[in-house]
Length: 320
Image (cartoon, rainbow, N blue to C red; front, side, top):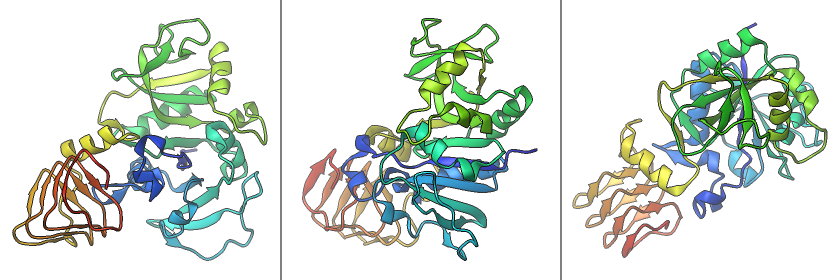
């Protein structure tokens, strides 16, 4: 059976992106005028995914208008934590939001939606990852090997925490915790999980998936596939967020619904819909979020404008 469902991990606090995440949860931070979570959803759709779950925690009210409203289900869903789920849709696909009043971490979050997952495998995708990886190859590898978990890995990157066996198809250690090998590959934050993996996760606990991954690694049951094709960017910190806007071309830098007055000077900057940049303003390597305003006396260099207060004056490397 083709894998048709995905779980987008959206409940993190986004501490590395503060103060931006004081206004929006990290998955809703815009990348080229589109929330990070939507880029993850689109990537999954490209691999054939038809239904989605997203977990929320920080600023849950910001998710209420994400996607489209649907008719209430006959039997309202709830997570194992007892919190009712919110049924939405996204581009015609089922989207269910599972709120976590108490943050459950990755393992607890998966266990919480066990009823939604049911008897089919699920693709898990971190919401702050932008990638053009061939996810269909990950899905196929997971189906072919029958492993409880299959991790998508990269050969290059800064956080090489995954040690592999000689075949390169199994993880034998993570961060050296089992003493079996030094890390040679980067975990992409994207993986496939079979329903039986949920049996390895304790109920009603705030817990990471890593302990369960290590148990599988001990038994030779933690599958991997190396996906070095395409782009892969972790946008969880400010530097990476700014760099992505400088280096990627994911659409028009200046949204058609932005107002850029004559006399404003913009260099390598991105301005969102409904944003206003007044005449005389100078922007370089900066990002202006939707609906924000930059005054005519503003000189901004590597700044992110995200608040509802018009920005003026000279600023460098600030979030305003």
